[in-house]
Figure (tube, rainbow over the protein chains, first blue to last red):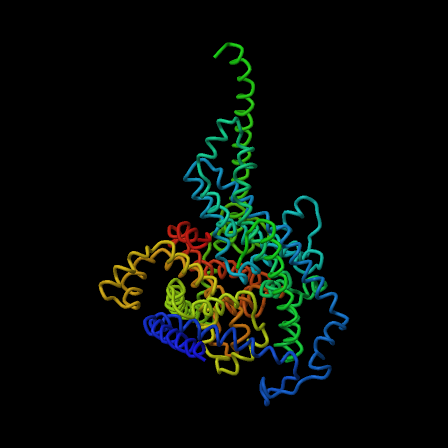
Length: 318
Length: 310
């Protein structure tokens, strides 16, 4: 009895203390409020809205009022997993992202190593500034440049191919060319920007290490191999975790711009399917279910890569 | 050192010098390659935008502008819809970026302090980086809260990036010493006063970087306009550009209507429409790139401090 009383008192004083803490920090809550409201409206309310994936959404009845589907609410998932296009969508999405990651990921690292070893400070700065520029070009404009330069009739690339005796290639309208165009243009646009992190990591290398290596008789190749590379690996691991979390998503906006009638066989990915079926044809519940499936897979991927990297070298995101 | 030892060292040292020289040449070649690959496409688009249409489409403009002309730019500046959407984008970008900066710095400052509930709030912020409602639920929510087809959706959508909040928070914790807070506290300053009088003036670098991040993201966003806007007069530039630039058909009609002289041959018109595309690319991209180049000196420092995990 006495103990209970005691606990009450201590709880009471703790609450009082917390209350004081809140009062003392009232401005902090005020300052974070707008961002919190934003997240509630644009992130958490939509998460609440995910329930339509298990329902048959009817506009008049709204998100909460719509009836649950058959199969305990899993009808849409069942339909999707058994649809004839399911395999094509999954493999297109995975291939685009896995191939993309495979070819894209090493590029910023290579760039950082190159930039880091430029001896003239002015050239180094110029190169850094220049390789960031493509990042500031919009996806729409990038797509526009691709359509123009790769045009089969008057694009410069095909003029070059013709001049060398080759036949014009209809890059933007051939399924086999979609992935290369997508990935190479992505490297052009983002490799430079993504190298910032690695350049920062390299800037943190203790210059004494290089001096010591020189005394030990190491040449520059060896310095890159044994000093620069190991310093980049933690950052690289972190980026790999971040990137592998989006193996099933995130390429929708650009893919939509590069998608043409001719390349659908490879460019038809989950994201563009959700866009056209959901917003184009109004199949809200069905496409919300597909979107939820993608998000859950991505979430699991992030958590597991994070766990793996934690075990391997102690680098984690959270 | 004996003569023998000297003789033994020489070949080893020479080997290193040789390897280093090869390395330097290799780096030189790679830098040249990187710069050409990065800059040539941009350069090509710019020189083509000033060149004669027929020469461009037949692939004869490669190194410098030929048949200098401003016809393409004239056509672009005569297109009312383009001008209007350009103006829309300016408004969305300026207002949106201003809101983003205020909201982001506020949240970043709060998360850099210690207070009851910090753990919960940090979690609520971080969680959105790894899970979201997805396109369709977000669309329905935006419609339900009455933002569909309103200019505000273009301003507010994406106005808080949790990633940017984290970057700004890291910047604040790593560059502003705690002693300043204690001193301000002793002088009786409230947390709001400390934030406005001390944190903000000391955060110039990160504010410059954030304004480029947010401004460029807003300027380059075609998606919000595509999904959430219906009224054409509200559309931002990039959404209009999607129709003009990103399709095989090249929106012939739209481009042809830009060229006033209808007496010309059809082929010539098409060529001019093609040139107009180059001009549109230059005009629409220039603001973002110029903003970046102006703020560029803040970049290396700001990005590094913000992104390197404290």
